[in-house]
Length: 400
Image (cartoon, rainbow, N blue to C red; front, top):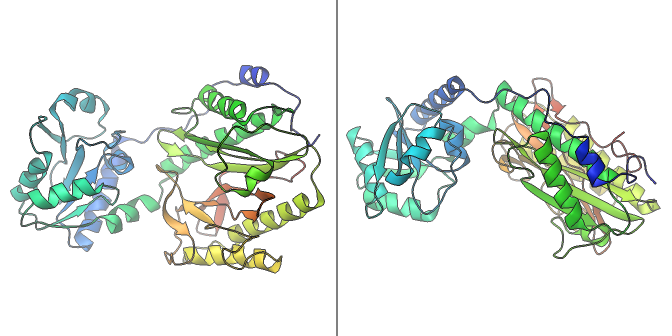
């Protein structure tokens, strides 16, 4: 059996887990003030009078409010000056105030009233002629605002919001480092419980419980457990597989710490890897390392994707998205969302900058047979890239 794979049980591994000892500090009110100051700076650069932030990760970023979007409008209006305005249903006011991480002017609406009218009134108070709307806001919110806000042009807030969120502070980096370290520990223990006949659903359940035991916000935020030929599909196949000896195993999972995400994938064999398993694994690892080594401030996101693909193409895979080869982008930004701008993919010419964070996962798929994905994350430094977690050591000893 490969090193660290099998030989234990879920009960034993869970009994050994304790809440994470050295927890990263939570995001402070002072940091959120700095975020809003920065947003206002970008607003001025883009000629925007007000920023409308819908419920979701952007609202959490600016206001510390972990509120999920729904059909009822909960939003923040950030104007050039003054306190932010929070619009919410009247019956939710108490719950919202208990979670809010910012001083704000709260304006409420009853079920028969238009929340968009409240936003329009606040815009008109300042004579706002251009308002930037959260790029994650659903169509019905944009439609409602356009109808209510006559005289105010509604534009896309992505240039403002993305510019703020792409560059992580030291506090954000610390929270992500903890989340990723926790998930890597869960990966290590998940490998240890594998046994012939174990169901993928049992492994997923263990991973969720292990994340909870370590103190993640909500257990696993997602989890994919794939065996054998199912690994050839980047997001798996329906149904509950059972593990057989010499199967390739691909596990992709993550958690949140104070809303900040991890997202790590490991690929290894339960038993003895084939010659082809080993060869493809080495090509995959080389592409991942080449992408990492190419990172420098000022290099475009698309160039990192191109570097990984050149490694794969030299090994006979591709070109482009052709299979066998890499069917998707090399990586994505990560933070309060698992996937967020910018993206390591052709066409994204965003220059890398210190503080940006990305996944690095140039998967190799051999159609109908298997796929190998190694996913770790890095952040950009002045000198290049720095791993959050140590990459996989080998297909035989995935955790050292």
